[in-house]
Image 1 (tube, helix red, strand yellow):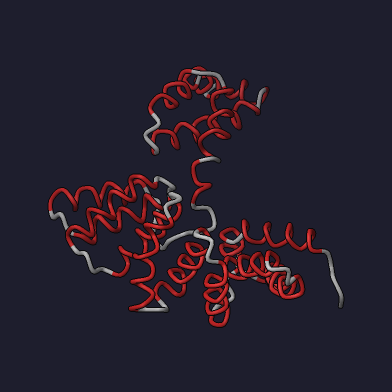
Image 2 (tube, one colour):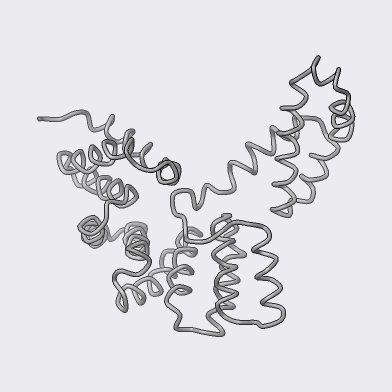
Length: 260
């Protein structure tokens, strides 16, 4: 269908008469490129040969679903396909630990967690003490729902550098302890984070623990601050923290306004 629609788009009269063709083709090509980037070969065939229904199905079943594991938990780095190729070439020729680790970061950003974990393991085989690799591998294991395996990695990094990754490793450790049911210890870590940073990710999860411990006033205070600061944040930050703002508003509605 893509080839047929492209041929029709080359006809200016057809484009003027049917402008929806441009939007339809752009959407399908967008999904096709994404499928190729993710190496979703079967989907790529359907998207190239199939009707627009394939693009719609791919959008909801793959494109939107894939990053859910890491949405709101970004690591520094790029998701660029060219960067993956560069790192793969460097690994092939040099096989350095930091190249494996950087490739793991790219895969983590793309929510390709199994591939990210393999890269982090390869990096640690070559350099078992690197703080960034240990911290990011711990976060990857946590997103894979393996908090018991993530814990020693994250605890080790935090013990060496409590401010590692501008508090992101400490946040990951707090999330790990929450996943393991150690909510008192997690709450203490969230307090440490919020004393130094105003991350919505930290404030919302601290508020969720306050709410779970029947301390709604403390929870509301954290959530109201998050919601109040959001309109004044830079656009890129608002996009990054959208999931936390949404969670904050949902929990605020559930808690109600409470006493003034």
